[in-house]
Amino acid sequence: MSDYGVDTDEWQALPWSWAAQLLGDNKNFWVGTASAGGRPHSLPVWGVWDDERHRFMFSCASTLRKAANLSANP
Image (cartoon, rainbow, N blue to C red; front, side, top):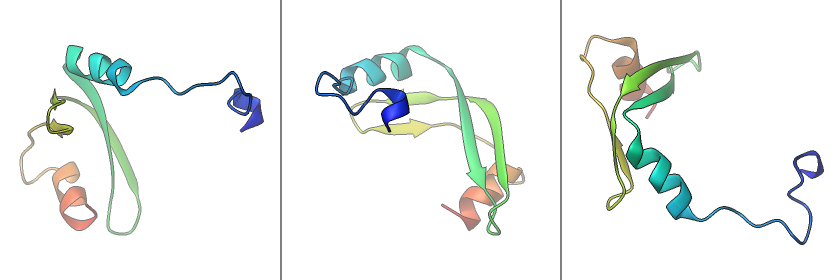
């Protein structure tokens, strides 16, 4: 991935604490799912990041496309 500058000796990945801080401070997230046939679907949702369990939680009605996609293609 030389175009991104990650192939140098100086490059270091950001620590998980950096991502956890950003996730924990937000309530707006984008969720991307795919149908059983692979058709993509993405939309913004309100959610909560639980860093202790490394788990993202959001709610939706069982009749919505994202719920059907997650059920068919977890």
